[in-house]
Figure 1 (tube, helix red, strand yellow):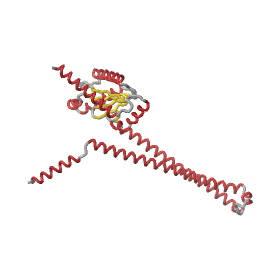
Figure 2 (cartoon, helix red, strand yellow):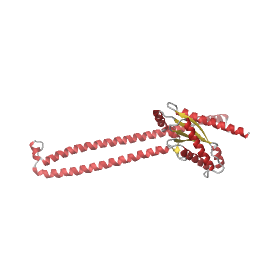
Figure 3 (cartoon, helix red, strand yellow):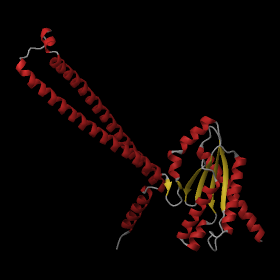
Figure 4 (cartoon, one colour):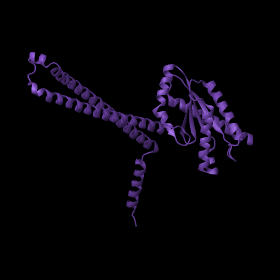
Length: 306
């Protein structure tokens, strides 16, 4: 049997393990750090390859210049040998001129073969670099797409949205920030199963794409939550867009695409991003408004049922 000391030691070890275990946020942060590190290493590798190509280009053209000068001197000696001899720059026997001529022709042929080979290698290396750059750009873009709903995922906020906000600050335009979630989504998964839950998420994403403009940004923030950034939109126009969304939901609930036994309902909150604002504060404000609206709606429903 284990004594009290052993049990205390085991409990302390378990507590220490729980304490030192990384939280999901820490794991996500570590993954982002590793991803940034890999991207940085890839960028440095591409930059090194490009610099190496530029050096090879410079070396190649240096060789071209030297060979051209040597060929020009040889050609001058063949075309006007008497002039070269009179200047005292070259002294050869006339019997050696044919050998010099054939050596000159051979040198020209070998030089052209070398140049063609080097140019082909440089062309192939450039094509490979272009393919790698295109592949990395496509992979980066795919990493910011939610595969289920085909909308941007949370990484878009961390990687790209800051550039959009700087552009809005520079142009002096406001952005509508809408936080949206699906009412009673956990009950959908419990009642209908996760496959139906996935279908509901896809249907909501499709309604968002159909309702909002192409210039608006739709992001699956996590779980059943979406964030929509409305370009150059104030609060009044944000609510007009949400009225269109509500009408689209009503049509979906009354249409043939609806899921039997399920009525789609969304909750949302709106906040406006203006120059100099902190985006996370704006997002938090929209989230709080959404929760307040949900609470008010719940109280009205509860009061009506009584």
